[in-house]
Amino acid sequence: MNKITIVLSLVILLSLTSLGGANPGGVGDGDFDMQCGGACHGDASQNQTSPALLELSLDGDAYFGLPVSITASVSGIQFSSSDAIGLFLLTDVTGHSDLPEDGGWEVISDVNGGDNNYVEIEGSSFDEAYTISWTLKPTVLESTTFYLSIHHGGQNTPYFAISSGLNIDVLPVPDNLPRLSSEYSPIISRDLGQQTTMPVFTSDVDELAIEWRLVDRPSNSINATLVDNNSWEFELPPALQPSIIEWRAVMDGDGPTQITPWFRIAAQEPILEVNQLQVYLQSLAFCIFFLTLILTLQSRYLNNQEDLSMEIDHSSLVPQQENSGVSTPPLPEGGLPDGWTMEQWKWYGHEYLEDLK
Amino acid sequence: MISSATFHVITTELVVGSFAMAGICFLVLAIQSFGVFESEKATIVTDYAGHFALGFGLLATPFAIFTGISSSPTSDLSSPLLVNKMFLSMIATGLAVAVLFTRTKAGNQLSASKPSSLIQSAAGLAASGFMLMTASIGGKFSRGESVLDFLNLPYDTIFLMPTWVSAIILVAGVLSAIVAVINLTKSSAIEH
Picture (cartoon, each protein chain N blue to C red):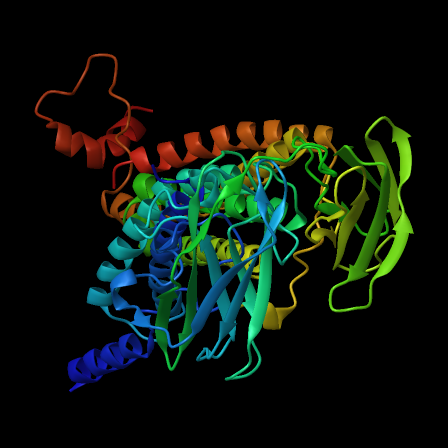
């Protein structure tokens, strides 16, 4: 009966686990292939097809070496209890070598203030639509097809879907086009409370205006200051709590006015600056301390036990010694007297010695 | 090629699974040490299973630590959470090594002494607890939440000693460990 109860309990406990939802809370943003190495949903073969409607669109034209935005629209998702939605921007559907970098594109910023092809966003409603964007830069002059993939949970089941492809032709940069320098990479993170001077490097730009805003807030306009030839800078106010500021540049020159995609800069807790050697040494010290503590305690108690057992052994010998009688008296000068045995001498030898006295 | 992050997931699953198994076994041993129930069969099974699981988890621990460091955002200890992970995992490692060494040297003498068997069970349980706390911080770091959130543990605070203090503890600890090992070896060498 007990065995049956134990087996049933184990079966019930195992049944309560969700084999498919390995990470229902998500795995965090990162650079992941389509199936994220199996880390997101545990086993890709258990995925159900998501009913989500996915669409990718390109904002403007893609010029070689210049940033451009790709916008993803998502709707009709069935949420898991944690409402986490994982979105991938991919350049292939084979499940490997499908990052934008593999297709010759560099991710400059994502919706969460990072520079990853996989981002997680929080959902709040069954039928709400979501629009997010990535800012990327083509590093090769060729066409690339992008796909949007989604991972999410719902009804204790992992869901997966992938959009149809968005083909993007990368164009050569026209002469005199006001633009950012092809080597320019904006700062995408900063510490809390830090006033930020943002440098901007351009080509064929005479005037540079900056628009910045907090996410989903009205934008502010400021003029960038020319520092040197094609080198500008502007100031962003410090953030008092983790947040993301979006900014874009409006560039005037001989060519038509150009507006860059929205770049994002995330304010976060300062990175811990600590002496790595100090940490490793302390870790080792902790390890040795606790190891020694246990060994010392054990050696003490085990030795005490040993002493105790020896004491017990001695005490058990005491009655034996009593039973064995008096100690054997010393033999006289001539040795054992004639007719005596050693056993007799042991017991009565002391009387013989007394008589001699 | 497997990335450090994926390899870290694999190794941590091995470590956490093994230490959790060991923790259950040491819990049973501890309960038996207090005389709540007695079963020779349960003692034998949990003793062997607990120490084996602890040993297996210990083998996977260095891989988990190294892959964890290399897969962190800056490939070093750049967050208080990561520093605390390092401390806790090394404490668990020290306890686990001590438990396994004592079991190897003292053998069945451990079960003959109530204090020794209690220390052994408590150390094994503590090793499992510290390793599970390490895993919990990992969840906090990567997903912003962990199963131990309800305890409100101060993961954001680090207790960092000066280097010279760590060095003194390290040297004193090594010397004490050598003495303790010699004593344990002596006591285990005495024939009964």
